[in-house]
Amino acid sequence: MQRTALRPDEAGLSRRRGRNRYFDLLRAAALLRVIVYHTVGWPWLHLLVPAMGVMFALAGCLMADSLERRPPVRVVVSRMRRLLPPVWAFGIVAIAMGWVAVGVGRREWFHLLFWLLPLRDPESHAVGFGYVDILWYVRTYLWFVILSPVLLIAFRKAPVVTLAAPLALLPAAALTSPFTSARHGAVIDILGFGTCWALGFAAHDGYLARLPVLVCGAVVATLSAVGLALEIAYPFGRSGSTGPVFVGYALWSAAWVLVLMRWNPDMSWMTKCGWLRSAVTVVNARAVTIYIWHDAAIAVIAVFLHTARVHVSHVVELPAVLLLTGLAVLAFGWVEDLAARRRPKLLPRAA
Image 1 (cartoon, rainbow, N blue to C red):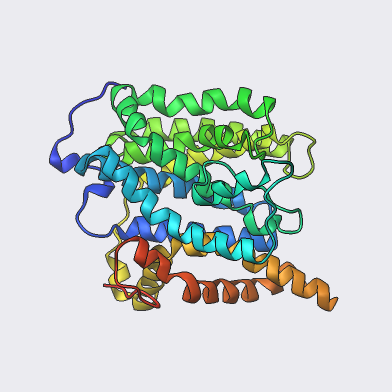
Image 2: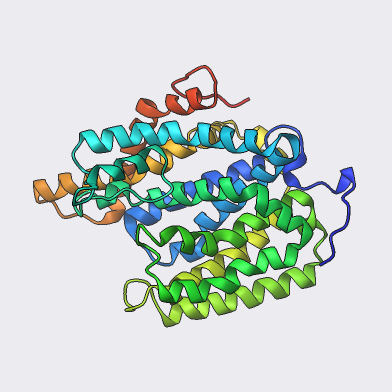
């Protein structure tokens, strides 16, 4: 695909002034899917809504918009400033609760630095794994933010290569190193969701809006077919190798992110649905808090039920998980306001 200059009327979704309600709704739906999936564990949910790919694509689109308006160093520092304080608040509680191990040997306290700048996962006790395993998203997002100035230049010079390269390199990397390990996870996750992040660039620059429907359909059909085949052949949790299933999920995610990012529905109907607009506003303003605390809520509920020797369906646990996550939002969500240099509020209001 040869890059052509964009006219103002061809600008991507993120160039519109004000909030993009479609993006906000996608992010809220993705976060809800993450909570439900982590609580009930239905494997088909991550295929129905490829939430992580959607979240990375939306972030890539917004990152491209910021890099177009401000110098790269300022953009990277600003994104880190908005991301890290909520993570620090989470880490303080994690360490205070004694749920986090700092490793073994003479360098054990060195791992605490990864709570300050999570370019790698902090070490954790097995009992506290459910409390900190979600930090892989924070770590991957942080790497994408740091790499984005270079990635955006590469995309604008060679868009097809930049979009295809992560998926092309992923199989070799996923099959030769454990993608969940603290040392190698960043590389695998960057490759696994790199195409989704670059699709955010493509949406911003208007490439997806100009992509012919037949071409889009062919790409989506190919990626989703191969991805689904790998998911079926190597079901998560039943296969001895996690590599193929992760490759399958990456292909599936890229396919449906392409569909969702190319689609540009009319969202004027949300102005008439006040409760939904308010809910979406709160979720987007507290997205980091919701994401990093929901797994802690799941872990707390699991410990409570185990201690009480109560056995219930995971579906029954979902309301309690949502309630605890909501309480965490009330308790710690204001940190996101401080990080964004806004006046702290208990809950934001829809405009």
